[in-house]
Amino acid sequence: MKKIFTIGCLLMIFVIQSQMQQYYQQHVDYKMDIDVNVKDYQYSGNQTITYTNNSPDTLSVFYFHLYWNAFQPNSMMDQKLQELGKSSDGRMITKEGVSRISILKPNEIGYQKINSLKQEGVELKFTVEGTVMKVQLAKPILPHQATTFTMNWEAQVPMMIRRAGRNNPEGIDLTMTQWYPKVAEYDYEGWHTFDYIAREFQGVFGNFDVSVTIDSKYILGAGGVLLNPQEVKGYSVQSKPIVKNNKSLWHFKAENIHDFAWAADPDYTVETVQVPEGPLVYLVYQKSEKTKYWEQTKAIIPQYYQIMKENFGPYPYPTYSFIQGGDGGMEYGMCSMILGNAKSLEGLAGLMFHEGSHSWFQQILATNESMRAWMDEGFTSYAESLAMAKIFPDSVNNTPNDHIKTLTGYIGYINNRVEEPMGLFADHFKTNNGYSVAAYLKGEIFLVQLEYIVGKQNFHKIMKTYFDTWKFKHPTDRDFIHIAQKISGMDLKWYWNYMTTTTRKIDYSIKEVSENAGNTVVTLENMGEFPMPVDIYVTCADGSQKIYTIPLNMMHDAKDQEFDIPQVQLPYWKWTQKTYSFELPVKLNNIKTIEIDSTQRLADSNITNNIYKNK
Image 1 (tube, rainbow, N blue to C red):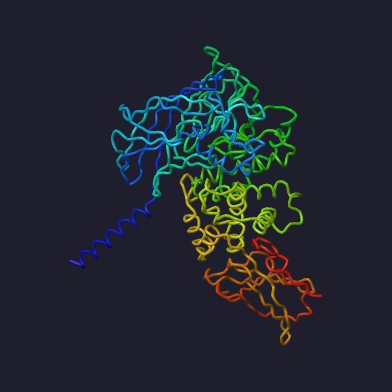
Image 2: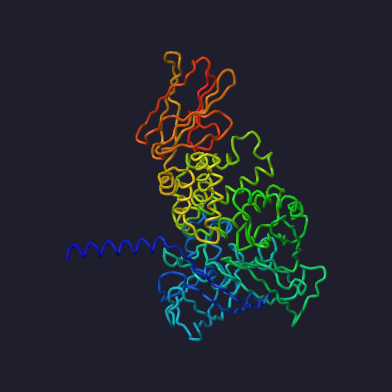
């Protein structure tokens, strides 16, 4: 009996492991008809949703996100703002530190009210708790089966407070983001039903067929392809707008995306940039002196897409829209909402490059931002820095690498403020600064240091392979590390663990330099709590250079030569060992400098002890 029980347990473990290793993702198709009342800032919506359960699980309940319900007094978003007070995002509070949501009037709040929801024609019961709607299904959705929902709802566009809303500070009438009842994601981690607290979100890949009927004076910018450009304003010089009851119909389609957004304003101008072997890019904005730099971006947008293609992978969709709307910058499927007013071309380009790069890391490589914001914001920031350095080279003149500003900002923060772990859920950071540093700065540094560890050539292969392998899916950090280990041949689990779960600092120093029998002896010390491989750059009096790379023993390998400078691999540095000594086959008086990581890709918290200069 004991033997049979043991065999049974082993078989069960094998089945569970096999299921965990079997990748799947759900699919959803939306067909929406929207009728907007611009006078009351309200709209009515009907949608048919076809949902395919590609998982091995039977689904007996179902979830939707109702994001705009967050813009109501005493919502969870409001409560979080009241808790943070003046440390909150400055766009969401008054000068006195009062939540702007808490003072909204009934005609200013946002809401999404479900009037009817049916599954295969059968009315469904549901409960709404804030921004999450839980549905009791009429019949379970079996593995590899599809079902159809029909829904009727009405909504009110909130005052512009964060990302979505009406009458933003730049005068955009409607920013329609996170505006429709949206199917929640289900994967091997379960239902992703995060309450909306103003930060990140995730969705199910699928297709959108969206028809919007709105006052004929308005021009729309949206993700997706406009199917009737000659029947509406702004998109065709040959257009003959079709107007019925003072309204026009706009019809958009988008395939294989996980969110659809749009904005509307009577004063929009629509311009285009065709990227060679890439998308048709729309610029949708209010043309004025304040937005004069938009015209100049037409020359650099094709360069940007080429840089992204070379370093990560090609943009796969037919169009992309940069739309003036929102309260800063925010990415959506095939479009982004950004501020239009800019003080310089560089400033506007940086915003465009950041939000545009989300197309790769938040839309195509659709990681769950609510759980792993750093994989999107950090990787996107890395791409932004890379593009800015190549297109605006003067911005990085005389700096060791393209990301030095990020490294400097991060080190300054952790040396003066309390850092929070990068792996926290996005909405659960104690401060906005804590979130920003972890998601944006440290997330970018995660890649900068990974390049330092594995070498430039391997790093480039990792990023391209990651994109090719996981595009149109929902990768996690485990999936990314798996690819990084496979390509580099290194064990990188230690790095992944230290970066995402701890706030330990890196601090290596040159402890002592001496001479022994005609050789120079260098002694290094790990004064921090975060073990890393160490590169030592030695410059001799005659100007010659050599790199001595010391791999960490946990890596079980070392990077190949990165640069034209000769590179020598030294024995492993054990992570339990505080000091490390090695000899240089040169007399001390023939050495000019000895420096730890002169590229400054290592996020060393104290670089003042990283260099030895021979007197």
